[in-house]
Length: 192
Image 1 (cartoon, rainbow, N blue to C red):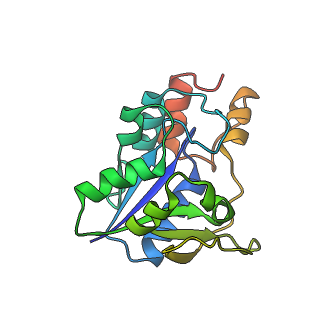
Image 2 (cartoon, helix red, strand yellow):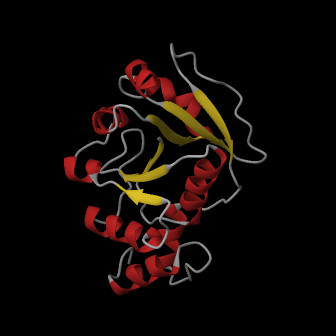
């Protein structure tokens, strides 16, 4: 089987995340796609505003109807800083005979050399990078054994930071976030 993994804070999940997942799933003919919410991303400022339980519930609300997508809470249960290598080791043990793909944005390629144990990671998974229209990837890191697949991504300029700000300013999340996730945000008074 071909299994793709898309990690992120998903705080909140939005259509940019979901379109990236769908693009990677379709263009690479994946059999499964697993969303992996991070406890804390190592190369980002600690900008997670909602609890692990809330972010997991938001993801479930957003994709529960879509049988193509699954959710793994492995990083949330582990807690602390979420290093991709730890998750990939976990998934490689679970799926020893499958092809594993880690999905990243093209903007992450220049930073890939900074990822923990990147040489081992490059041996364990192939990377699918999403290239957004008008934002071509200019440089590919020189990492031994690195396998890359380019994926045409859609241009959806949405950020979770912007969405949290919209909630604070009492602006609508419609057309940015799946409706069931919006209802969860409102009912649980997130990002206020």
